[in-house]
Amino acid sequence: MDKINNALIFGAGEFGKLIHRLIMSNNNSQFNIKGFIDEDLFKVGLKVNDIKVFSSNEIDIQFIKENEIKSIIFAVRNNSFEKVSLEKKISQLEKITKLPIIIPPDLNFWINNGLDVTLLKNRIKYEDFVERENIDFDTNELSQNFNNKTILITGGAGSIGSEICSQLVNFPNTRVAIIDISEINIFKLKQNINSIEGLEIFLGDISDVEFIKKVISDIKPDFVFNAAAFKHVDICEENPLSTLKINAQATFNFIDICLKNKVKNFVQISTDKAVEPTTVMGLSKRLVELYLININKTVDSNYIITRFGNVLGSSGSVLRIFEHQLSNNKPITVTHRKATRYFMSIQEAARLVIKSSTFNLGTKLYVFNMGSQKNIYDLACEFLKNRGIVPEIQYPIKITGLKKSEKITEKLFYKDEHITQTVENKLNIMSLEKFKIKSKILRNDLKAYLKGELELDKLFKLIHNHE
Image 1: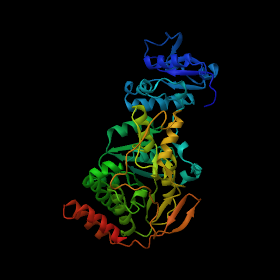
Image 2: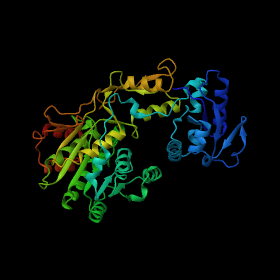
Image 3: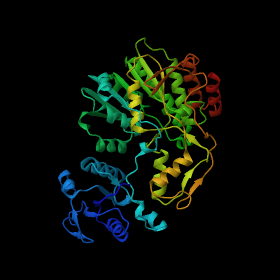
Image 4: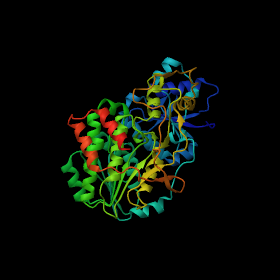
């Protein structure tokens, strides 16, 4: 961390006072605390540890310049805020002040491991853990493809869906709508998105055929981005029936409704777990890939598949898990010392999904250039070092063992998939000739499983045999 002369502490409660005492007692501290910030009007104007308490409204650009403030230490315990409000407040501080926000370890960590001022680190940036050049495109050029267009995003309040939404809603002359079943995710989206007045929100279930028909009929989208799915591998594994109903059957129906209503552009968000799937989630995504490849479409339709690896910073992603484990003073867990995965940031994943929709090349599979796979154990070590903690010495990393259906490594391609074109060294367009299956067969296989007439392992075998 660069030397910081002046800082503010957000939170004048017990945790904030503890952070201040810790800084004052350390002769090597990089911080000079210029004040506290607190939302409690009874504290504003008072002094805490001989330091003045300011209200949030007083902290503007002029205040920051006059006092040469370089950072804000966010000293509010996790249980003092609802999680949504906590994330919103941190985002607001970053937006208003343009300063780095420093997030201390949770108090429970310090109780168990001792107080250490070196653990005051800048808020973690997930993109810093992607060891390659960031993937980006000219936003102005990209936005022209959506001029005067209506866009529908399913799962639009989830991790990847909300990022797609956030990027598209800022394009000029676009109409953006989302479908999501989660009230809390919609609430979070409304709290965080800038142009909420330009966003239409439909609360509902993608498996509700009549609901989907009405939405598609009413708004007549030019582009559909389908991000609605169950994505957490372990939960999907424990609930195969529900996963396949939503991720596969409901998506089949949704695709058919879009075709019937002459939706020209449809983007399916897939995953590297769909390649030689061993998990229920991967199987469900592969079924949809095959369905899209093989359904009858109009000549000018642009129904595409985007396939990529893990998204850092999404809900349930490995770094989020590490953060939760650290803040709760639990060991960092890794399944296998040699386990590796492909990673990209959520921002670049959304940009590539959006970019893929603009080529108008018909039914294509776009596989993102993810660089090299990253070792998960090494990632855990990097995460701890980023927090100022020595892995294994100051904090344990526990090897839990691979789960039954888990792979050590993932693949981005099938052996019979070949790159036919690469766009700007970022998007690989794949050949699909080897995967010709009647969509009716896929529907019948899935229907048999959902009715209890086919065992799950046989559904896996049928899919592999089709390939």
